[in-house]
Image 1 (spheres, rainbow, N blue to C red):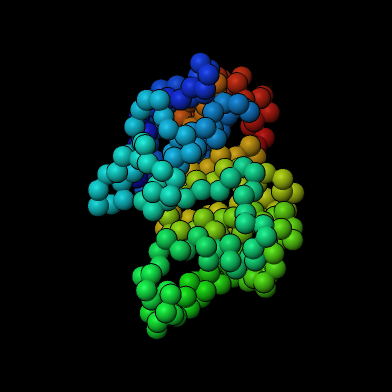
Image 2: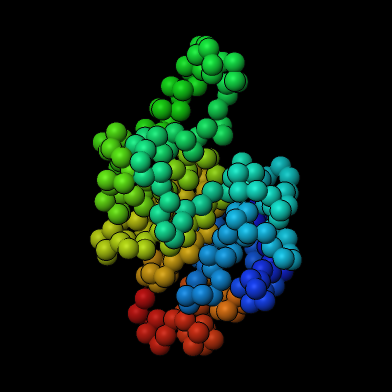
Amino acid sequence: MSILSVNKLTKSFGGVNAVTNVNFKIEKGELVGLIGPNGAGKTTVFNLLTGVYTPDNGSILLDNGEQQKELRGEKPYEICKEGVSRTFQNIRLFKDLTVLDNVRIAMNQNVNYGLVSSFLHLPSYKREEKRLVDESLELLRIMELDQKKDELARNLPYGQQRRLEIARALATKPILLLLDEPAAGMNPAETTQLTGLIEWIQDRFNLTILLIEHDMSLVMKICKRIYVLDHGILIAEGTPEKIKTNERVIKAYLGEDVSNA
């Protein structure tokens, strides 16, 4: 079953085509890579999928198992409620809030108390607040950040900020997780740890994942299928083995030494 179906997705800025007639599908439970050179349109695709930009043309269909939902034209918070969450190439944490509060905020869309209960601090409000804290702490434990819960997010080392951003994305309870260059800025040891973490959380949370990444060792190891963009045009799709030997992909992006990735 295709959890995400993208058809003829197109976006231009000032007459420059950033994405042109892009088509792809992601099946439920897949971990799919989206790669290409800088400026290929990868992050633009993510911004279109999450409502940051509105497509000029095309459709974005999300299937949650009960119905198909057209995401084109939806606002980011509406798309998030439908089950699509993301991280960013440049980390966007609430840096002046604590690690715990960064995760708690992301859970607010799933609270089960009303305005009156919140104002009067009724038992239903207290129960829900305890649940939010408990679930937030569990996510931090999974990310090995529970001991940092009271620290300001800005004070975390870079690699831990990356993990906190993933924890915050998971807090929205997504069915589709978009990771925009999660290994950017990480050293080899951190990247190796992240590779295992992505595979683990996919299984633990029953997620479908679309991943943008320039680290080809990570992409080739964990992605079951890969799509390749160049100048906003989809030029290839297939397994890592197929992509590594695709002459057009090698010329546009990977280079002759990709077989060593």
